Length: 127
Image 1 (cartoon, one colour):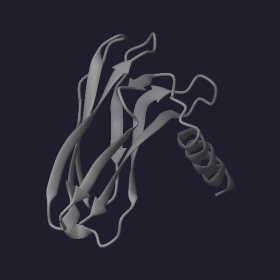
Image 2 (cartoon, one colour):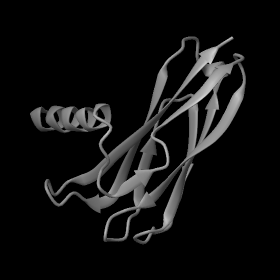
Image 3 (spheres, one colour):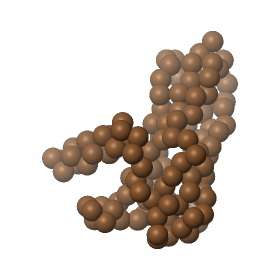
Image 4 (cartoon, one colour):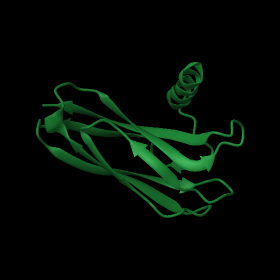
């Protein structure tokens, strides 16, 4: 349990500081959907480049139940681009908030030996 808490702390700290995993460079890490009407469905995407020297593969992408996700499922070679597609259903939300999108790669972090984790986020406001 202590190890899990420590890993979550490191992951959260990395996201708060805006640092990358060293594997993915995003065109933007935060998307502002602006002011929307409750019930509206918004589609957007996060585009990234593999900035590492090894092939990259996404294992899991996760967000809240208001978000449907799809992502590049093939191996992404160094220098190639990938995409995480987001479909946000505002009917499932009652408050304004920032939604975190957590990304776990098949790749191992050379420093820890554990999986590489990264993240992006999006925000919205209601009319």
